[in-house]
Length: 290
Length: 322
Image (cartoon, rainbow over all chains, first blue to last red; front, side):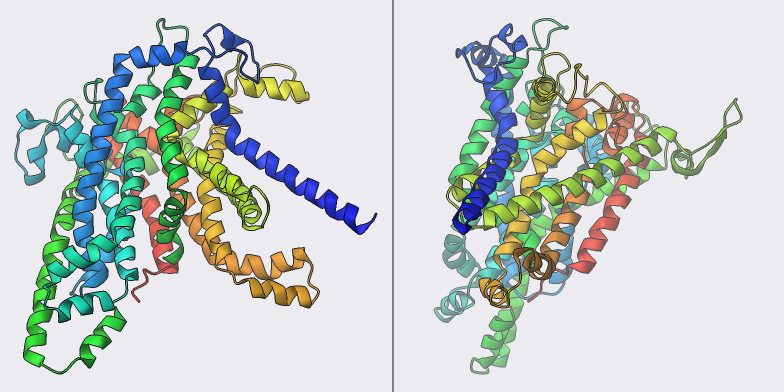
């Protein structure tokens, strides 16, 4: 075999491997899209390429009040959690990344450990808190119950959102050059002014990335969402998809479920495509440097 | 941090003023950290304390505050109580729980091993230079971007016993002749969920390993090329050893994640056909059986198992304090 032929063969083999990998990664989503463009009857006939495009499933999904309410609740909850944890987390991250103080390492460890906290361990006790918020201080106030409210989700989502934003932002603050602050200090700025006027603007890109990852995590959350809410007034879209109901009990409307799945996923995929680089950096920063 | 402190020390000595400044800094730091600490206290530390407290009672979900203190009874029933059955056989602890633990461990081992192999392969491919590398980088993010609940529904549909594309593909290739009810059959259900989990989380593994690959300097390979080392030799002698830290981190992270699996099981099988895992078992006891005491005992045990891995992670990779 000539050298050139061997090289060509190697190339073909390499691209074959790539084709297999791409097929593996993308086929499930492709299949969801194809299925969502079929009618209920067409689902029974497995064709790998879409023949005709029926948008009926999407019409059903967008006329489904539960799904629309779910989307609204998901947006409100995810957005609120993201904003709250970015604000509070960036304060803590500035202190942890930039200021010398006693007990810093302990807190840093605590925050890191919290990013790995198993939610299932506290879902039962958080439920008692949601049902009766005063229980934290040993009092009783079932009248203030947060059960089946979006507030319950915003508060409990902080368990994972706040440590995550704090930890990632701490790393970003640390990576900024020290000269910036020194210059600000020489100019007579107070530490808080230094944070607010010098460092915070520089951290904007990091805030956007961290915020996006937090938003995605909140958007995808399922355990708390299905446990702390009861009906679609406060339920997010994940339980709505998990418990999607058809017109009759026996027939599962797979085309509608797939349409709903595509609708929920498209914004995430777009975000990921647009902010690819930053997401990958944000995802790997904490783990690899650790 | 070290750099900054040095710089401050180099500055003209004005001891009194500096200590005032240091105090000012420290006070600000505490003020900035306080809200985060307070919230962690309310949403994590207190619930954990409450979970442990409840696990020593027989409290029912529907009757708040009426549980009696039962000491270690729940843990005993869960872990070590010996019960003799009418046929003379002996059961230790709660066999449903032990089955859930076995399933979880099995799922974790298989999925993490498969993810490692696939993730390493994909990372190596992305790291080599070829046309369409950008597309590949993007494609790898797609499974990661899809919510777990959605992935679970997508795969449930692919696994459908009558109209599923999975059965169709395997029949076309001739691997199976009859439709298989992948998620209803106890011999295949756990494997089916595991494969979904592998698909969903391989990207994370691949990205972590890729990040590790990219910090290996290229001249190491150039030197090896000059010395006449083959590509396979280079991979075994250079790439793998240098990747070890990245792979270890990825393995620990994924193991902790897999041990906590809940969403996929809940949506795909709801713990049926031999797929009950620790988290679904805890949730079932807490909310379906309304056993707040017993369910919290399960939760605490899960917490302790995860904690072991967190400690392993922290001791092998200390938080960098510069």
